[in-house]
Length: 188
Image (cartoon, rainbow, N blue to C red):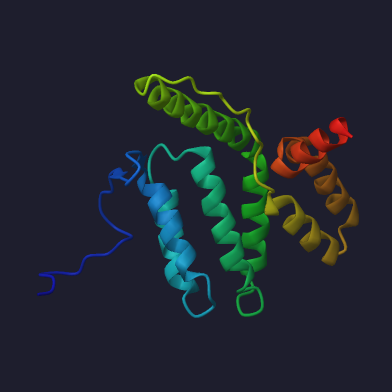
């Protein structure tokens, strides 16, 4: 039993992994999920190394980068009291996440379309019709709010207000909660 040499998760070649539902999970997706297990202060260095490895994969999709940044920010933010560079790292990561937000929204929509196509194909194989569901929306984004809070605490209130305004126009209209609220208002 055992290994003939040191094998790490953060070095070497990664390849797609088949999941039980038949879809291929990218190495980035797998590593992002794995990194979430190491968010505590004690394990943060492990999680950050795994997240860093995930960011180095070629062809990283915007949605995978979005989830990697969520984990990175949550982990790194906890280190702000012990590492002077942590808060600046969080700010940069939030700005990066906001910059890719339009691509993330498109990615979520594309993923939904692909899932709907798969479901329609399965129903067709069974000889049944499939009623497609409209795109429900994207999940809420912690990036805008986290960045606005940090900026406000640093006394940069105009910048914080600008980030909140961007959230209202760039992300919020595409969220699941916003779309549900809009549908409820139109019914009532």
